[in-house]
Length: 106
Image (cartoon, rainbow, N blue to C red; front, side):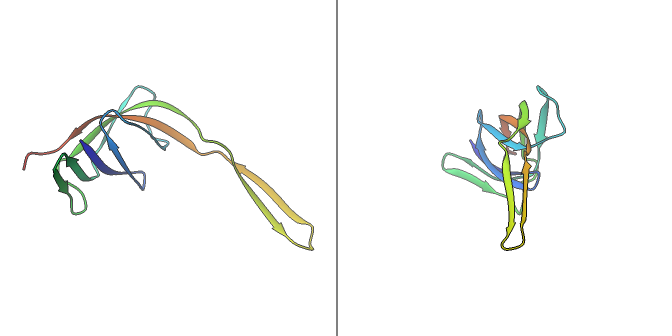
């Protein structure tokens, strides 16, 4: 079963058992989170599309780990003025595992 869902302003597509990196969630390692903003669910030939979300559809996911992504360097430069700035940033993330996709019977 495949689902497209919205989490923290981003859209993700995943199947049951798949692991994803998403922006940091307010849940500790080992806790489960419920995602209710499910937009599309496909099961073989049958698919359900929401307007914009599917009522009563839910995804249960478990937080596997948390961490920081690789560093992204930001470099600013203006010619002939001796202006140079370097800044780095590491984004926090949570790694989640999709355990169960639940769809209401139609």
